[in-house]
Length: 512
Image (cartoon, rainbow, N blue to C red; front, side, top):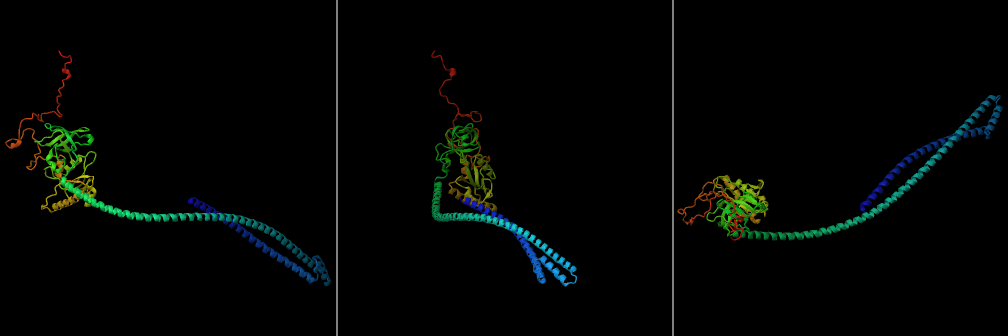
């Protein structure tokens, strides 16, 4: 409503200004015309005065002439008596008398003409004065009308100004009330905020204490229990040791990938993925084909000849996490296949092949890299190792006694980064395990063909067995009647007879 009243006031003020300008212009032109008429009237009055003065002078001259000749009567009588006086006093005054008569007549005629002209001019002047007076009267009437309209508009404007002033005072009162209420609210908010900030500080302090207690408890728990997981990822459903093949109860629905490797545990184990359960590892397998939503074929990569793989053996891989993209962090040197040189590229291939990603790593030069190989700083470690990260893998930290000062500096950087990454991992519940344990858990098998006395030989003989002369505790060596995988074409579980007879040979005629 205030905006509409303001608009009406502005419109009224605009109309008043326009009328004032219009009336001013009209008054200006009328005043100019009135001034011009007044000037003309003054000139005519002056001219009339001059003519009146001339006529008066002529009349005075006639009067003086009359007095001079002693005949202050009418003009013709004066003329006649003057002629007689002149004739009387002169011997022959006819000529002079006639000349004087003519002069007097001419003077009288001229006087009459001048008087008539003055009278005509006076009449014309009076007519012009009447016209000017009529114009002045009309102009005064117009000015009175304009003044009345201006007075009315001014009265209306004063009324609107008064109304606007009342409304403005009302709005100012409302604004003052609102300001007072706002000030009160701000004071209450400031008090509330101060109290809440104090509460937040107390809660943050308490949360920090609880977090430190939780971290301490988590560290103690992980030290006591070691790496632990709730359950295996799946199990073997069928094993053909001769063909080097087995089948698992995982498949397309689990987002399983070809090339994913698993470690195989004994049925009775102390928990998969635990450091104390390494003795329960029976072998390693690699997925080679997806056969269905819950069925996949795997290749037996490695198995314990004294405890071969069997159906229902649980399988587990730290890299397998259905429905989620596993994140891991890595620090240290990665050399695990027995061949010279770094195996970082092979490790990244294994991780990406299983659908996981490296969210943070310290490379062989001691640099901190992100998942897109962007170089980071130590300040980025806490933001990259979070509760979404599952593992921190620790590789070789290098030789502390190396004579290569440049390489020693890199190793020192790795150790420093390892401490920061370990703290971040323990604060977020991330499992810290060695690279070798991780490779065992995912079922990785070295591709190296170089024999080392400290490592298991990476090849399997197709035929033959250990001799009792070299290994007396081998036990019975009787044949299991199993067909060698080199000659067997069987790829599925063999059928078992249920005692039923084929319909082709069933007796349908009854007893003979």
